[in-house]
Picture 1: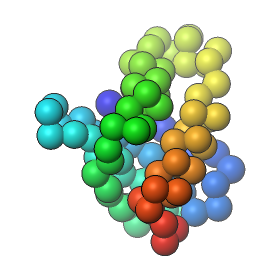
Picture 2: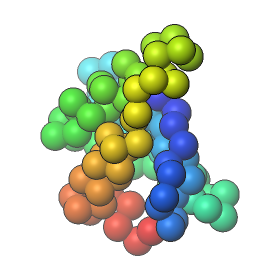
Picture 3: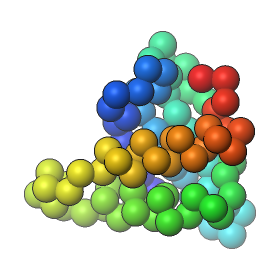
Picture 4: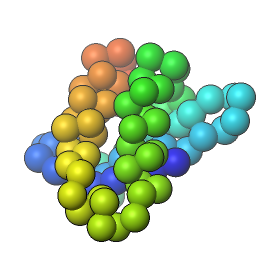
Length: 88
């Protein structure tokens, strides 16, 4: 679905999403030390995941014009506040 760099976070350097059809979506984060962590997520983050997936699928010229960093930060904050990746 998407694989993006996370700018400005003290713990996470990358975030990716993998869709499993009707089963759901998993978010994978790569910590600054290279460790990977994954969590299944629910539908309350669906719009943010869809926005990042659309950005990732767009042509590079559009990716360069559209800032996705705010969406990444909001998604990571939402995941943390709902208990996902809380120990980062």
